[in-house]
Structures are given as C-alpha cells and as structure tokens.
Image (cartoon, rainbow, N blue to C red; front, side, top):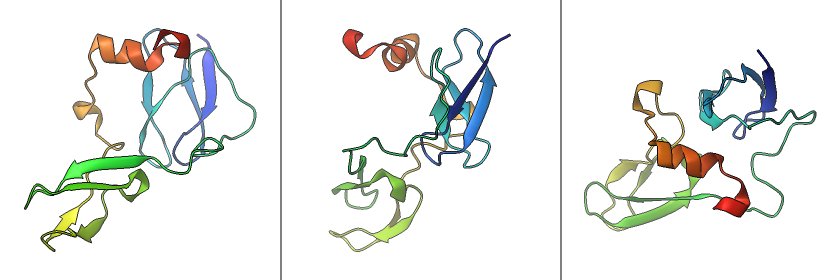
Length: 120
C-alpha cells in the first residue's frame, strides 16, 4: 500500500497515512485537528497554515444567549470571550477538532471537498 506524506494544514506537523481509497480526512497526531489528506500528493516542504495572501479564515456563529451573529478568526476556536451584545461569557465553537464519532460527511460533501477546483 502506498503512503501519502503531507503536512497538517493547521499546525504544519509532518504526517503520513496509508493512501487508502476513500480516505479523505485524518486526525493530526500533534494538534488533534481533523485535516484533509491530499489525494496523490507528496510534499517536501511544510506549507503555511494559511496560503500566501489569505489573511484570515472567519468563523460565524450565534451567541447561545441572545442569538447575536458573531464572526471571529477561526483560530479562536474553543476560546472563551464575552458577547459584545449581551456581555455574557461564551465559548467559540470547535470547528476542526471534532471527535471521529462526530465526523460524518455525506458522499456529496466528500465529493465536493475532494474535487478539483475546475469541478467546484
């Protein structure tokens, strides 16, 4: 079986997994984030967490107390802060460290996430 070598898109740690058909996601052994496994791609140099020119990835969510729509840098996941509207303490939702039991993508979602840019 072929092994795919790549770097975690979140922390940059070197990873390797058996390249099994249908294997699209794996858990990083260092940061525990669920990250995509590149299809048929081995890289020699670590990649940046965000590609050049991308300044931030935003996470939008609702305050559970007042339903105020909030937007914050995605790297703040699972951190505590006060809602700017109601001032109640809230926790930024975890978006990338879901346990394996919570990761359930439909075949359409997997197809979209692994398709070439030309097919999106």
